Length: 235
Image (cartoon, rainbow, N blue to C red; front, top):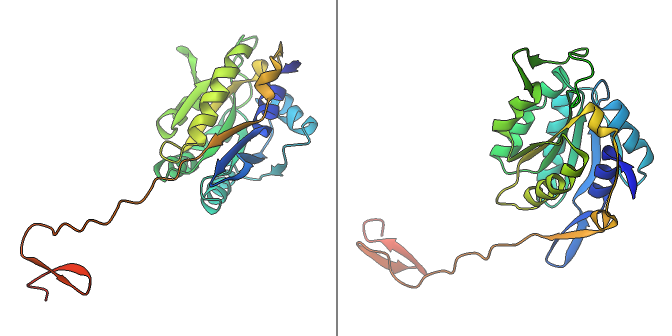
């Protein structure tokens, strides 16, 4: 199936589900976005064409992440939102919300635009980068606040990156902010994708069993009282 990288990613995300206690639901139920240089011609076009992925128009990048984090908390980490931004200050506004998501183990998928992989024009408007390191962009500030980070610099790299990203999002113990940095030109690059990449996938979310209550008395001066172990001093 021939699609652009952005089209393939959006279609892939629309086919991901979680399941716990026999109940199945969409993993990524919607995408927030503010479009500009870095994502309008790739992810923006893909979201317009993919009817299975609802879109929410944002006005501030940090607010979009906080809204996505609140949604994941309300859905008990079983569903999440994606957030796409342009390269530059739009991407840096993601950092605070990403840190909040990661420290609280709440899933959110970040899709910031990135610098041109082929570097036909550098720098572009509002693009932030190091003049002495061409492989570093402003998106690298998301590395320490993400549970998973990858920069997709070739179309075929999307397949393992997307699968790894979804695996982390669906794991309550490992989840948090997941970042896929998408170079502007790679988003719009066409590629022949295997159809099984877009097949529906169900990620089983385990429910850890609570620890059994022990009948063994704790060490020290304790004695049973009202069905519980309490200290003699407290008694």
